[in-house]
Length: 90
View 1 (cartoon, rainbow, N blue to C red):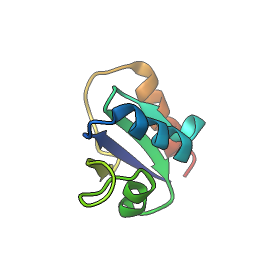
View 2 (view 1 turned 60 degrees about the horizontal axis):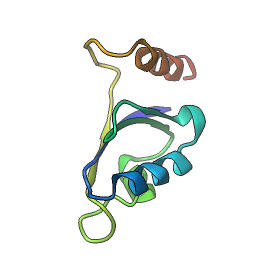
View 3 (view 1 turned 30 degrees about the vertical axis):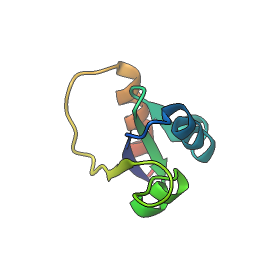
View 4 (view 1 turned 90 degrees about the horizontal axis):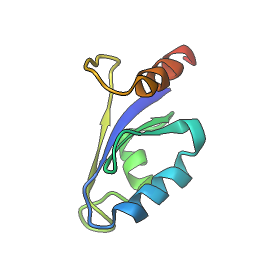
């Protein structure tokens, strides 16, 4: 299952976040910050963007990045555990 980094950049952040939580419930998403989420999905990044209503012509602006298991840094322990759970399920 792929992991995507999602940046919500529109004015309606709470509405965008609610769409994300409904489309990717429970352990399929991880909130890093108000505008930044990690999402697991077995689909294309363009499909994830459509599911979240991210568009330049309809909906809200935002970005979807597919991660390639190459990441580094220092942040919340639960975020790294969430990432590891996704890697074990493949």
